[in-house]
Image (cartoon, rainbow over all chains, first blue to last red; front, side, top):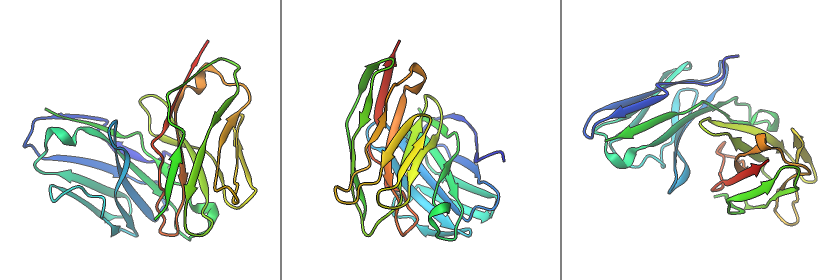
Length: 117
Length: 111
């Protein structure tokens, strides 16, 4: 299995521009999570989906952030307009459902390092 | 919701030294417990897990035991290597499918 795939790996943009981060979860996984990692705040959960439906978006910092999952194989996290304080590493993770303890491991992608100038 | 308190770093050790990284948590019920590791420039990887009280998770020489009575899941390794240099995260699971991550502990192992 290819694991969780994220693109781009690095993104440099200017303040005010729209940024779209992409994620392909592991095939067959029902849950998809978006995290943000910064030195100051550590690892924060932004939003997660179950069967393509957003379940909890309480971690989304503000309306400039939006996430979609149009199908089981693809999700996007969009920032519009971007600001310098959005600079961080953004991770996508997926896990299988079922609720059993053998399936509760989250698998992380390599991350997208975003720099907003 | 769940919370986790993890030993603050950074931790610097010499090769072959003994490692302990403390982790305590608060959670509803008895969640699965995880240690993840993040190597420089990479995403988080599962290091080990334990799913019930008194279970011991182990991998790559690392071990952690699920201690219900002390709500702890301390990570240990008997002899660290330079290649173990990374950031380590403790995380209890939750019935809502979320993981609650600690702040992470940076480990540096010198030759």
